[in-house]
Each structure stands twice: as C-alpha cells, then as structure tokens.
Image 1 (cartoon, helix red, strand yellow):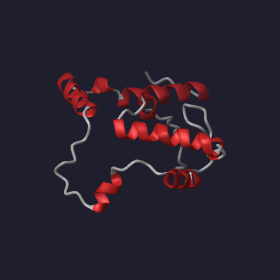
Image 2 (image 1 turned 180 degrees about the vertical axis):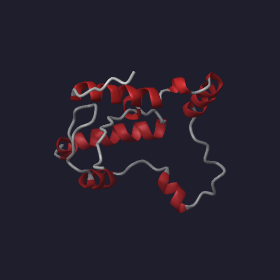
Image 3 (image 1 turned 135 degrees about the vertical axis):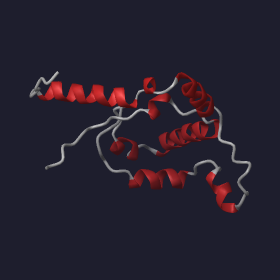
Length: 129
C-alpha cells in the first residue's frame, strides 16, 4: 500500500510475517502436503546402500568422546528457543553429560526428533549497498 515504515519494531514484525508467509506450508498444494507428511514421518530406508565400515559408523550410537568433542567446537553464541546457552551445556558435570548422551541416543535410534528442533530464529541483517 506504499506506506513507508520507519519504526524498527514494525519493520521487524513485517519481516517476520514475510518470512512466515514465504516458508509456510500454505504455499503448497494439499496433495503435495499429504505426501510430504507421509514421507517425513517414515524412517529413512538405507537398505539399498552397501554396508561398509563407514556406513555402519554413521548408524551407531553417539559416543561420549563425540559429544564432548562436538560441544568443545560449539561457539558460545546466543541461545536458541530453549534459552540454554552453549557455555552452560559445556560446563555440565559428567553425570549430566551421560544423561544428555542417553537422550541424544534415544532420539537418534528411535528417530523421534522434538518438533522444537525443527524451528529456527531468523535474524535478517541488512547488507550495505
């Protein structure tokens, strides 16, 4: 409607609405959405892939040294929707890391990823020019 908006909060809200609208499932044909949902719900079938020591490694449970190594490589950036900063997770005692590892392995082996892990916070950054 050719209205010029200068209020930063209003600009951010409009950008958020635009991102939601652009990435919404409402943009897809209903038949496509039915198929998409069915495919996303079933576990991946990797039986056609020749089993090698490398592919077997991909399907094994996560080991403690892998968790610790990954945590050590995480940046101490802003927390996600759970509001838990990486620095806090990095400082967990051994027993808490064992529980975290059990949780990750349960999620991995049962293919039950929490819905919240499928969301992201998008922060648009204006580039000069």
